[in-house]
Image (cartoon, rainbow, N blue to C red; front, side, top):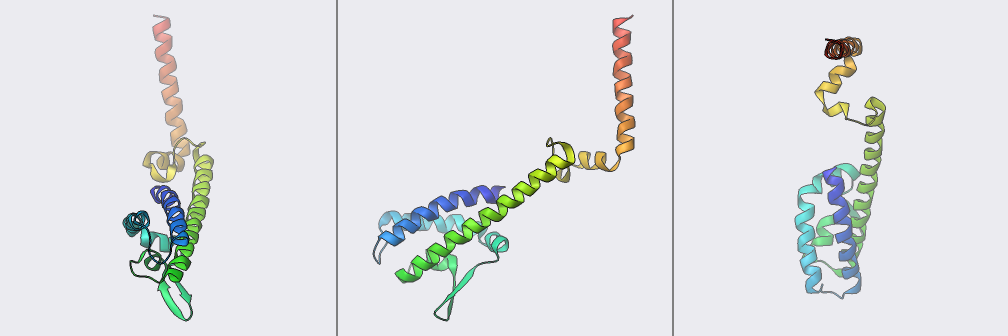
Length: 158
């Protein structure tokens, strides 16, 4: 979920960066340089996870293979290469968001199916135990209800 949220922010930043790349000449304005630095810092911790999710890191153009993110965010890069790589980066980010969004929907469906959406049984040992010991859980639950009912009866009828 953290990766998904970071990718949403990254997409907005990359969209702004792409606009600056496409609308500037060979040199980025200071705002573009600042944004480039911010994107380098933001993408560094998730670069391998992004590649893992999409399976994409490199692109080939004119028989030359380049790292998409390094080319988009490199300090000394030909403007046409930067434009291509920036567009591809945005595509990779959008693809990752789409894939993670699909996983999120699948996760939500599983969560609802397992326990009516209250807790995720895959991450909670108690609910995993309840799921695997249904009859024993039912007996404990009935015993607890019987205890509560008998206690209430004693309180009402002393």
